[in-house]
Image (cartoon, rainbow, N blue to C red; front, side, top):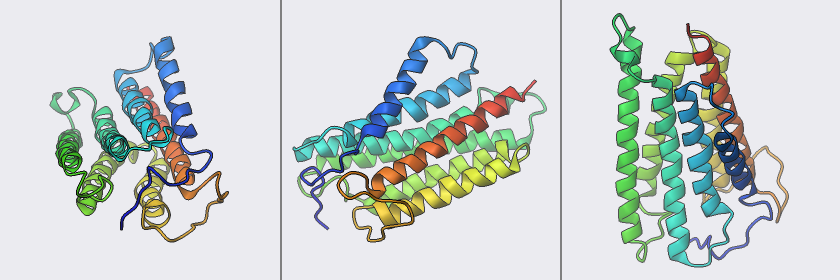
Length: 240
């Protein structure tokens, strides 16, 4: 593989979704309309709709022509995704819930999952730093690709573990939807239809030159993020 995505043709709609979501989320948070929302919900909004979407906009919306600039944007995008997973896990755990007297063992398990997810994100940061240093030998996209996917897989599994602990007891159908969409369809569609070596067109509509499988994937991810926000908001609203 020797892809040159920073020189290739780009679908007309590439990056617009990221820019619109990042701009809208930032505007809502800056407006102060979120003042009554619980702190974990605000934290979730920042690490899900602000930081990752701005990082993704830098990669997808800007038509990079230099390999170094594209590789840096790619590294920031990967970090934004991983930080989103670990940040979402932290939001679900809440502050000090595992240390409250009489707390159920699942609170402690969720807290440890959040800590491990932060470690996984830190490990990815080291990997991407090495990838940037060695970018002249191999593009960041291909540097330790399997390890990078593995770390993000750990991010996803730990988040899924915590989501199941928090959501399943109250809304089992919603947790099932979250896990099937976020841990099965999203990564499966990416590997088979979006990745640099993907060959399958997939079940979702395509518009050559305008709308690709990549855009479909990000739309599904946005649906996942909105559903996660709904689940988290419902969780904290149901607490006494």
